[in-house]
Length: 207
Image (tube, rainbow, N blue to C red; front, side, top):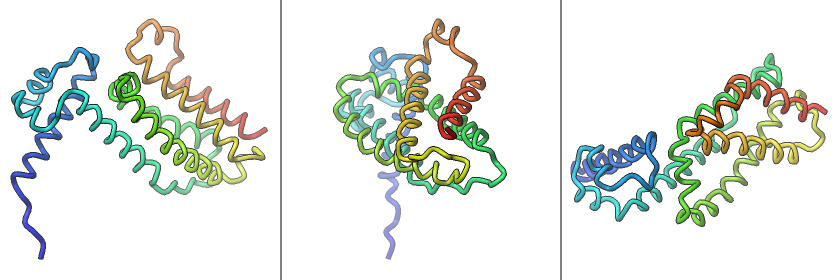
């Protein structure tokens, strides 16, 4: 016999989610160090006491955000790689993959930037990233296998590792430099960046 939902637990879950979303919203325009518990409470439409019933302190919010981001990445990596339409060229495949990846990174940039730059989280983050890197490399290698004869590089394992590090650099650029007008004034337009990166990747994968 299934137990009935507990309204109290549901309300608690919704309140916790509202608090997390409040911090995520604040991070879009402010640095984590400049955000107080009162700011989070006001944004969520609740009291400071309610915040402390769900989170020990500000850092506890970041621990939760880190766990949620990692779960999201793991879920994305675990999704079976879709079959690639046979009529697509390698450049088309890479262009679409880059567009989708960059869109997600740009959406999550405020949160990712906070997680990457908040020193107390570094040890936990490094440990989590080691496990994710291994998983991501496996998925990258599978992706290259699915590209079939379009990829002529003799060592797909090595190729996957090189592409992984190129993409990491590209994504970190988008995360860390998001709020730097001087940087973006000299940076290439997003579509041009995707196009040129795709062409470089094609050249590397088809020696």
